[in-house]
Image 1 (cartoon, helix red, strand yellow):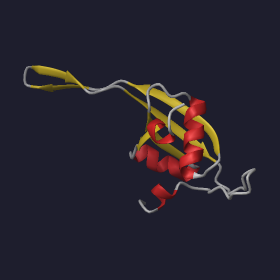
Image 2 (image 1 turned 120 degrees about the horizontal axis):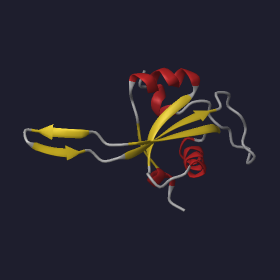
Image 3 (image 1 turned 90 degrees about the horizontal axis):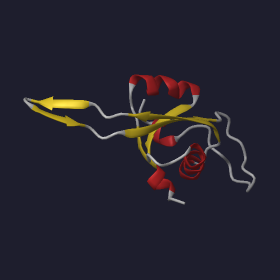
Image 4 (image 1 turned 180 degrees about the vertical axis):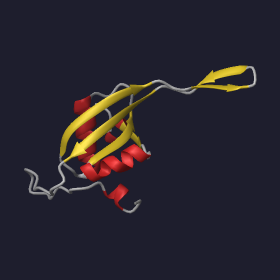
Length: 107
């Protein structure tokens, strides 16, 4: 199994993803070969939250032109992770968080 840092790559910051944060939904770019179970375990390990649901989208890269040359941006996979907003204790006795701290200071 891959490390959690290799599965969840970068956060996606758009108007829609910022609006979804009020509903405890966070959007990330993830590894193209990762499945929903691996993404959920990686999010729980990295951010100490309880994941309720994971939705994934395979996105195709945009075609870009510069003069006569045509190129294509790389394809990527995006995951919308829904977390439990109430902090709950884990089975190990550790306290789970209700938000992802990375996004708290941004907005």
